[in-house]
Length: 77
Image (cartoon, rainbow, N blue to C red):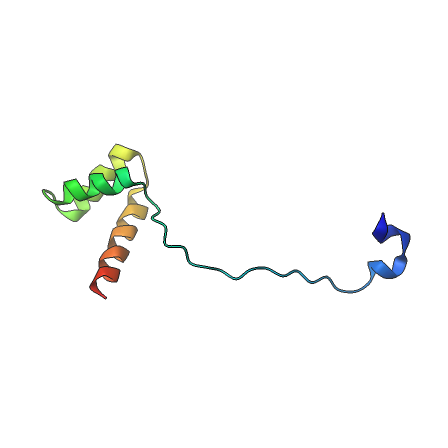
């Protein structure tokens, strides 16, 4: 190998260049989940709507609730 043939190549530093974090504006939930939540919130309180949506789609209710709270906060800005 190129590295093993010359001992001097084994010394020194290695530099790794990574691209920085870019925030993507992607919904963490499918359109089906968000549609179900939207329909339920017209007739039920938010907490119950989130619980039912999570149960129907077999997703984590805490993550869905956090998403809803963050969306409400961002919409007020």
